[in-house]
Length: 251
Image 1 (spheres, helix red, strand yellow):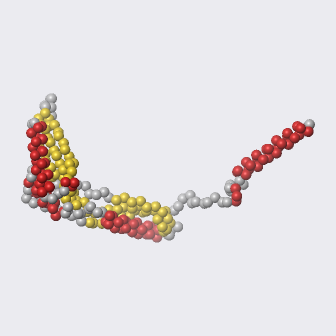
Image 2: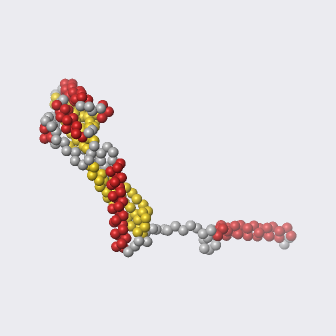
Image 3: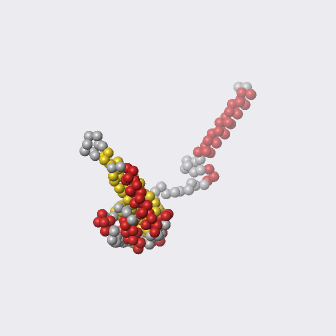
């Protein structure tokens, strides 16, 4: 073999050794340790936990009322029916303003014009029109609710559909219910840990859900008929409910 050919073969062997050594360095040793002798941080693949639910309930008196009221009318011609309902609503709104209800606490929630038909006839002819206009009125203090309804009915309101009571500032009650829910969850978890012969650790996850505000309560027809006298509105109490789901680590 010539001297130049031997030089080329030797250079190729050196190149293979360098590439192979770099490849082995990237792989590391058989133990899979990374370069530099630093061990990878160990994280537990699964953590033993006990998961429980807790509930807190707080009763608070409502401080705000929402009343839906207004006028509805029906007749064979749309124009006169609209005029009738519009006149009733003008009188109702004037009565609400005279009672001290600010304008920004009154808002329209329903304005509807429906066509009445005789569905017993083959062609379903139009027999008339129904117009409904309802407003939601925010009332504070609650002692004024009965008087507001009475004045609205006296002014021409022939619909009082919903009366609901809410708590305007729920923060303090929600905090109290949340504390009760967490205490309830802790007691349950401690009992389960005791029964299971394990030691309870700190919470590793917490989720919360709060009950929505109460839905409006329909006003009975008898109550509406009696409203011309004095509507006996009973606000009762609102219940603030908080539920939590807590996972505690165990050993």
